[in-house]
Amino acid sequence: MGSSSAAPAGGRSDAAGIAVGLDGHLYERNVMQTNGFLGSLFDYSFSSFITSKIIKVLYVLTTIVVALWAFLLILVAFNASSGAGMLTLLVIGPLLFLIAMIYARVGLELLMVIFRIHEDVRELNQRAGGVGSASVAVDPAPVAPPEPGPSIAPA
View 1 (cartoon, rainbow, N blue to C red):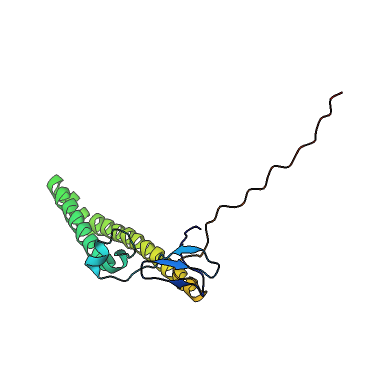
View 2 (cartoon, rainbow, N blue to C red):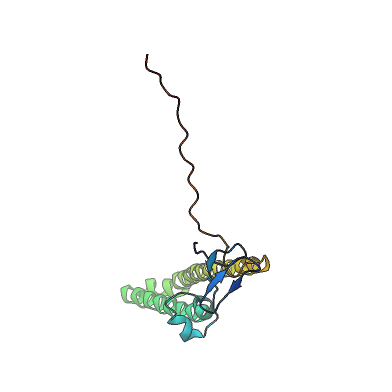
């Protein structure tokens, strides 16, 4: 008997997360749970994600950090000379702020796409009869005895 991710359709499971498939194999359920923020934060089994819950906060914090960085850049430029300060205030600072925010946004969107792909794949798997992840029984494959090679007759 082996364990894997989820019981096949028609199997039965218990509250402990162990399931018995129709084929009689034991399966370990790996279902994403929906917890609150603190429940997800201190979930040491990583059965729920917090990233999708805090992505907006991360974007706001990124905006604040990038704005402070641009402001510091402008101050350093004014400290060097008033001409460099004006150029940085009117052109370089806003341009770098815009570029940094584009990169931050694209990075956070890519992160969210990964999580949404995970949710969609899990939903498709559940529609197909799975419980959370693919159902695969892990049994050792039978090993066939080695085939005898040609025998060499003594001369």
